[in-house]
Length: 232
Image (cartoon, rainbow, N blue to C red; front, side):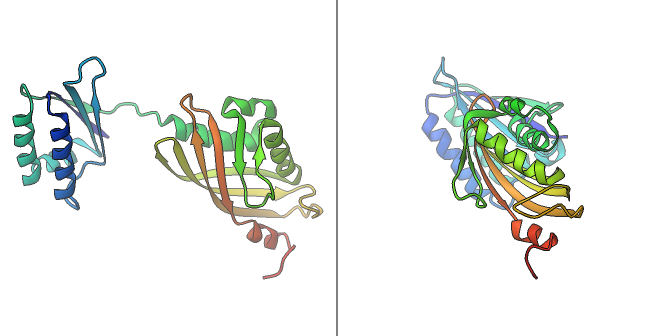
C-alpha cells in the first residue's frame, strides 16, 4: 500500500528550505526510498509551506527516515522553521490517475465505441494527432473519426495497455494491438488473418483531462509483413 507523509511548516525562509531539499536529494542519491516529492506554498500565507512525500509503503518510508542524511536535513529544516513542523502519515486508500485512465479509455473507445461522436468525451475539439503513417497530421474531431473508421474498416481489433507512465500533462502508453483482417486496408483485400502489432503513444492533456495532442509510434511494417504485403 502506498504511503504518503505530509510535512507542514511555517517559515519566512522558503528559498533556504528549497535549497535544503536540493541538498537532501543530492546527498541521498541511490539511498533514498521516496518516489515522489511535492513542495507547495500556501497562496493565502506565504510562510506556510507543505511538503508531500510519497513512498511505496510505510516500512520503506521508515528506512528512508533512518538515513543519516535525512536526520541531519530534518534538524536543519527545524532550524529554518518558525515553529516545530508537523507530520501527517497517510496510507493511500484511493489513487485515481485520471490522465492515465483517459488515455486508456480513448484506446478502448477507438476499438469498441459504436458512436464515434462520443470520442469528444476524451478528446478536445481541435485535437492534433501526429502519426508517421500519415503525410499530414490529423487535426480535428472529424479527421480523427475518419482515421478510426479506416482502421475499423480493415480490422476487428482491440488494444491491450501494457504500461503507462505519467509526467505533468503527458501520459506515455505502451500498447499491444491485435486484430482480425476482415476488410480492405490500404488496398489489401481481407485475408481473415489474425495479426498483432506493438507501439507507444504519448498524449498531452489539458487541465480538464481532455487530450489535446498525440504522438504515435508503431510497427506498421511488421503488420504489413504479416499480411503478406511486404517480404521479410
